[in-house]
Length: 269
Ligand code: 13P
Image: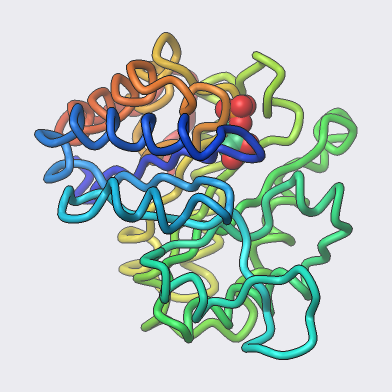
């Protein structure tokens, strides 16, 4: 039985308006009041709506996250947002290394590592995203790719800061496509990530680090994925924009917390 508290994030990406963002945050806050003790829940709206969403979430036990953060502390970096600006407006988490930023903003593993270290040093929690493309999976390189992203993303991150870090395994081909990884494939990737954390740090740290899954997770497939030992939550895109759907995923994560079983077809570690 796992002792890791589940972690569910809503990545709203470049969606919502001021009105719909605050409405969505208020509805999720209202309907997760009973869940926040058994599931860490973070909402990640677009930057301009962070302060307003912070207002809606105040005192409700949910966390507020940004979708990215600068690796620089301040200065002439047009368009960037620093970690201290995020904490200033009430954010306590940042997603870093999302595949959409790797792809559309040419983010590299080096740049991502700089962001991870800056965020952790600024007391933000980090959701570090890693995942392979379909071509990489078809070529049989999925595990090699994600472990390389993991090792690079965590370079020079000391063990005592890993408490602030959640790893999100998000296979690129599953994001926004309606295609999820099979539970056994996702579980195998999570198992390899955890094993790598053991190599990089130690067994205790590998056991306590949350590894969550992202890619077309919704209220209908969440139970199957979140029921797998080693899948400690989800990073949700499309389904996080509907409060009922997102709250259902959070409640499934909270329920599964005490009753994890290895998935059929997955070899024991
Ligand atoms: P979807 O849930 O829309 O596939 O997006 C997943 C994701 O990218 C979360 O960061």
